[in-house]
Length: 220
Image (cartoon, rainbow, N blue to C red; front, side, top):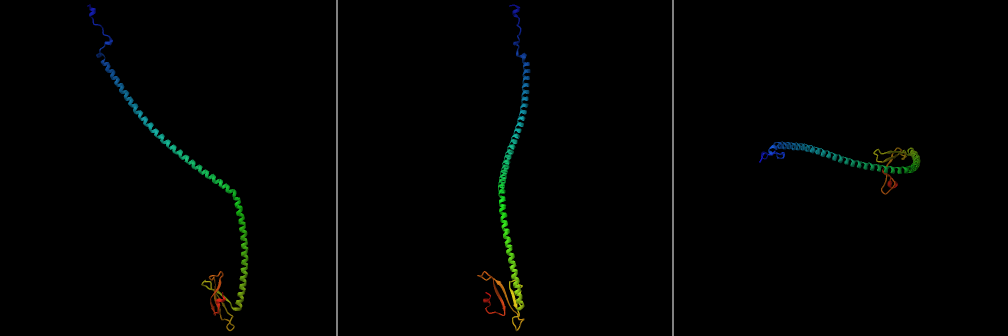
């Protein structure tokens, strides 16, 4: 063999031993580990931020739901208020229509009351006239009685006195009856009393001096 045959062939790049690339491999692995760690840290930061954002979104959603419930309650109250106002309006409209119907009948009622009042006034005037006539008749009767009493007083010494005890008794006394003693007093006490079974009052004599026989029969 020649010298050329005995030379060691040159090393190809693919034949580089692992021992030669180990440091590079370690550096690459370390770089990859750091990169993965950074990415995980970044992802953890993103995840934490995402959780916070989700919590904020949940709180906002709860707030929106609360506002929606309040809005629904307000709408319900507004609807109830509208119904109530509508009912009030309908009632007022019915009352107005009823009042208009009654007001159209009011002139007839007023005319009827006016005619009734005119009749009552006319009847009252007639009653007043009758009372006036009765009063005149009573005054004439009183005057006539006073004149008759004056005659009894002048000729018989009549004196009439009412009992002060207010029991309705009247004392009638006479003089000038006994020619032998003109000053001798004759009297009787009486009152008007409605007896049972009678519709008219009668004279009831409680005293008579001197006594008159059969006085009760005379006063029936």
